Length: 204
Image 1: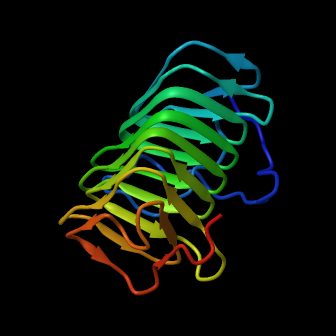
Image 2: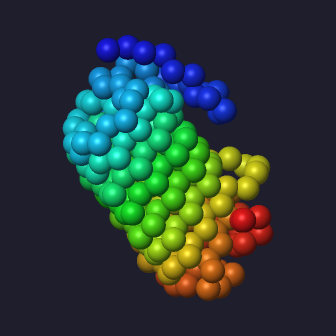
């Protein structure tokens, strides 16, 4: 199934890559979709290798999403109890609200829109979170992998209401602003944080 979707406010379109052996900075394009969600869907979703699930601007997903390979491109709305990316890539261009977002090994999450995590956001070892939007974590943020800003200019905040932890295997780089309610730095950091990362300088 093939459907062209213009990326709304961001107006970006790039080629969809084959399943990578290692996670690279590729952006999932909402073209050549194997499944298009263009209405409200309340069922749970299992996304497997070589599948591309595209949430259209009129689409809404309210079920749990589990990814074991494959890709998700969201230009609509995802309001899910849990998003678990075991392997694969998830690109968010609009709105994602979830209780739990887990980015596991060899997985990538690209944010160009708004993300709200009500409980915990975890980036595991060799997982990657690429940020060019706004992320609000109402619970805890734990990084064991890579968190990176994609642009050299602008403010792309990660706001944490609970505990913020960057463990020894974790790296935080690029143009990011992290704002923790309890401190002007992370609560705990044994990993590396690039000098380009700021703390509460532009976050709401």
